Image (cartoon, rainbow, N blue to C red):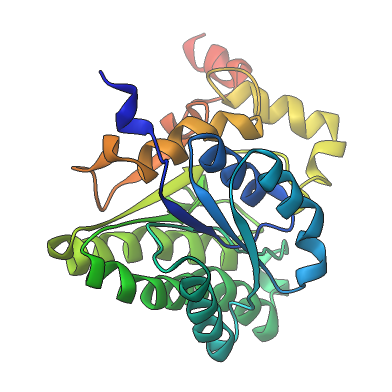
Length: 266
């Protein structure tokens, strides 16, 4: 197999939500594969150091302001991004948020914040960027989902609804835009430690419970996602669209804790 299938040289990738967390890891992976980067955040000052890091990898990089809950901001971002590089070949729809609460405590505003950011925002960013991709008859859109795209967890009702919606949205857009040379897939990480969920990892009992249910026996490390995002962004995935790629250490197999399984056998 030729390495050129995974070579992103000459490609321009736009990654939303790159001020921290997994968004930065996605951007680094794409840059190392050869892509130039458009970085986004609600606050441009949070991107200065990361933009310099990407330039240090020998890639071009620009930062663009984006609030995915503001339709006008999305339109301005798309215009600024296309103005910077002319074409966008890859979109990683990463910007997101979460509110962890028991379902009975979720407020109207909690729901709107999470679903508008994760689901509505992803759709309208994809719509804005896909217009140019359709004209050039080429594009790779990677919507970031979650293991909650296929599993339900207590305390994550709005988040799970939004990520489940991302999976369905991905399939719909893949059907809409496939004839125009644009593939749309969902990259769904399992349990990775991020700023959004770091409080959970401070509870060793919870970590032990989690690890016991993951077949590879550890939570995800951010660079575990590098190969998947480069694959979905590259020519290697040219016949893959509408799919959800779970990178979760196998937790979506439904594995039970060893103690529970042993009790069931006894």
